[in-house]
Length: 297
Image 1 (tube, rainbow, N blue to C red):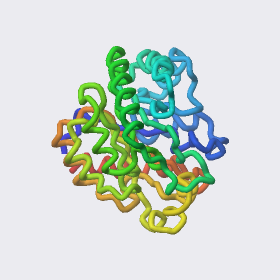
Image 2 (cartoon, rainbow, N blue to C red):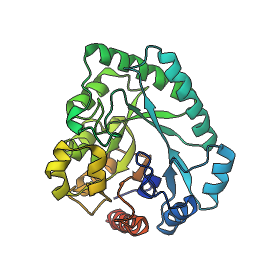
Image 3 (cartoon, rainbow, N blue to C red):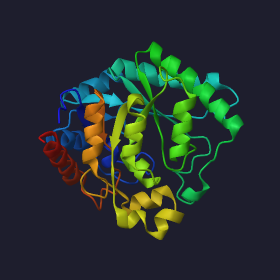
């Protein structure tokens, strides 16, 4: 496969969890970045331990030969009565990402989201009505316009426990938004967790994908009772996610489709686990070794 225009990175969430800060609380930023460099990755995404001053972060990442690929931004267009306030928050992040040289941002509508609540099962995820959808589409198109002014592409990140989780929800979002303004951040792990064959999304929406998160799924945990009826965070603690090549997803046809599409962005290994159970350096090396074998095919 010709991966010449594809860059490989890894997320700090593999070391320190952004939704459950006690996971990896003892791991320093320096250890995290050193592990990324040691395992051959060239990019990273934002994490809660990263400094918020662009000049400082550029210096720190540069010392480990890393680039900032993107960052997450939670939108609340469905809940908010004033979308301008959402856009003002977004612009602050865009200014930072622009200063960092990042070219994408991962947007996710988090109105009513349950993915960050340990006591709420995934079965209680929000389901948007037509009015909610109208608010969401209006807000996301405006967000995409704002991102465009900064030279940054908005990639929507579907996510377990949110209003955009299922294939039907992803499809409605893609069909309702303006392609020039809103693209897709495709996450293999969240797709498979939601009962979607990831390949279907890469085949049907490949022209909208501007950013890719690589996760694998441990099938025995996905099919367990706790993963079906429990919370998202509990399933993370149980180990539902792992790095590519260590779970049930067949990545070969996905990668073939990505290369065939002419994709030129980042692929980010983002497989949050409990670092006390799954050593981040070990799993980063596993991911690097696996991806290296695929690239050589």
